[in-house]
Every structure is written in structure tokens, then in C-alpha cells.
Length: 103
Image 1 (cartoon, rainbow, N blue to C red):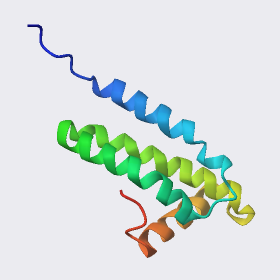
Image 2 (spheres, rainbow, N blue to C red):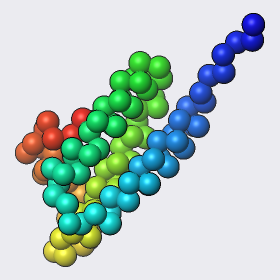
Image 3 (cartoon, rainbow, N blue to C red):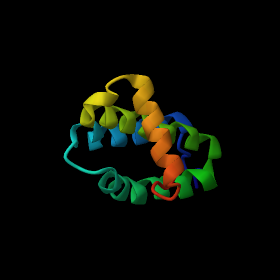
């Protein structure tokens, strides 16, 4: 029998990145932050369990979701259009509610 093919970590990164892009988070400005968290958490928790068990370094690129959340903040709140204020706001939300996201 031939050995089972193993998933290349770069293929996994491409696959997860494509999935995150398909959510189009930045266009869902009518949703609240908790709505987005509920939608994202189940999928992200599964990825974290799988890649954390199989290949831990593959978890680091999952932080790309944060970039899409910053983009969502910038589109939703006009006063946070700049990159730095949006990053600060995301950090403030994560620190204020540490259990809101699976990461």
C-alpha cells in the first residue's frame, strides 16, 4: 500500500486564507462584533484543534482573521478609519472580552 499523502502546511495556509476571504467580513457592517464572533468561533476553534494537533506552526497564519476584523472596524466606524485606531480598538475589545474569540 502507498503511504497516505500529507497536507503541505502551505497548502493548509492557502486553504484557510481562501476560506477567511470568502466570509467577506469587511462587508458585513450591519452585524455587531458579537455576531461576527459567533460566526467565526466554531470554524476557528476547529482549525485550532486540528492544526494545533497536526502542525502547530500552521496556527500562526490564522491571525489573518484579525486583519479582516480590523478592516471591518474601519468600514463600520468612520472615526476609526485609520489603521492604528482600528488596531487599538480591536486590541481593546479583545482585552476587555477575552473569551469573545476562540483565539
